[in-house]
Amino acid sequence: MSAALVVEDLVAGYEPGLPIVRGASLSVAAGEILAVLGPNGAGKSTLGKAVAGIVPVASGSVRLDGREIAGDPAHRMVRLGLGFVPQTENVFAELSVEDNLDLAAAVVGAPRAQRIAGIFELFPDLARQRRLDAGRLSGGQRQMLAVARALVASPRVLVLDEPSAGLSPKLAQHVFAKLAEIARDGVAIVLVEQNVRAALALAGRAVVLVEGRVRLEGEAAALAIDPRLRDAFLGRGEAA
Amino acid sequence: MLQLLVDGLVVGSTVALGAIGLTLTYSLLRFANFGHGELLTIGAYAALAVVGALAGFAAPPIGPFSFGWPLLAALPVAAAATALVALAVDAALFARLRARGAAIVLIIASFGAALALRNLLLFSFGPLPEYYSREIQIAIALVPRSVLGGMRVTPDQAFVLGLALACMAALHLFLSRTVLGKAMRATAMNPDLARVAGIDTAAVIRATWILGATLASVAGVFAGLTGQVRTTLGFELLLPMFAAAILGGVGSVLGAAIGGLVVGLAESLLTPVLGAEYRAASAFLAIIAILLVRPQGLFGKAAR
Image 1 (tube, chains in turn purple, orange):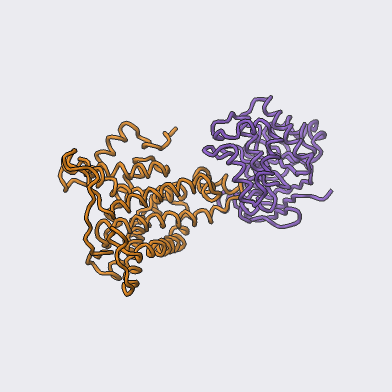
Image 2 (cartoon, rainbow over the protein chains, first blue to last red):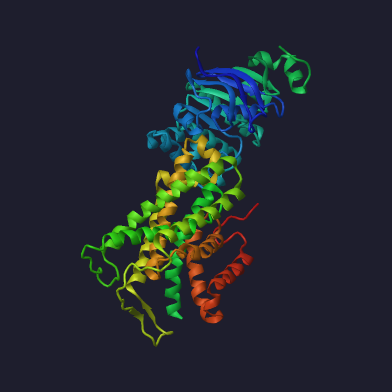
């Protein structure tokens, strides 16, 4: 299976000379879900943001379907097929649900009505709330809208920054079920997550980031029972 | 009393158009542009230059108005010229400072840009006030003098009020119905999210300058039409514009529009009570009163 997104030796951070991601590499194929795990401060979110173009990349490579996109403006990445769902403030609160989706479809030149109809089929809850301001949605609905907003641009790769944060376990499970559905449609998903158990249950593969570098990687099922996973989170040892 | 209302609304509509531009650039660029007044002045002088250039054509006043078609033709030219200046100042000054991320530096730079532009206009056009037209207008009595002192309005005042309201309605439709308008609102709400949602925020910022400058140029022409065209025209309206933007709730376009009208009315209605020398101060008294009750402004959101 050829990789949809390949990240190699990525160095990135908010301030020049102060990298948070220090040479991380990963790849994800179409239809695959890759979990990016790691303890607090490991650089997981920064990695996602750097891939999406909103944190400056100092060096390294990000290739989308073979095309180098590291350092490209974020809006161009969206047009090239990379979607990003931030952890918080991930919907335009003062726009209606429909306007959030319509705007995201319009700026990439997508057939708006057709795409929105497809999204509402996937997220019937949102269809019922289409006229409501996004700021008035519940936490779970808001997260769904954030995912839907990214999907309306038909991304080939979708990067999500902790989509289960702040949600009840039941709602998180609902979001994860939708992600599985989206991956089945052929979208490559990079899932940055704190919820290790749930992420490993959903993902096919996972990487564990420690201090901005990939410490562990492998099949999710194998990693779930690997004692080195706990060590990585507890800051013990230097696993291979 | 009724006459003061009309006078206040005419001044207020000019202030409102300026304040809308001010609040638009504030909400997208997160800085108070003290050079916004100069955009009004540039618009007023650009229109004056066009009217002067067309002076050779026989252009009698249109109907009851004091001006002929050259002033109407000058409006889009003035808007384009003002937008070009705004984009040039942004590219040469503000964009570079934005990249370094210090809002206070941007504010001070906008003072500098204002001074430079004002003196450039003074150098180019001289210190003497100018007029678009020296035609005499006859005010139309809308309400007889026996009722609360009566209400009279000149055709030019009616034109200013009508066009200002039309501009505000068009702006409302633009922001609520068009993709670019929604992209502007989205960028103002959350610039990072706008970028990852596929919005070219640099293009949106350019569009905002063009829109703000266009409204400023129209406001500048209004101020020149109902008064004089002079190099301090925009500077004199700067504080009322800020007052209107703050009163309406910074970042709210509807707020800036209503705020502008309130400032105009406050100036007009309080002048007979406090005296003409306190005209500018009277608007601020009204603002203090309103902000004491509603600190976030009329349409602003409360800080959490």
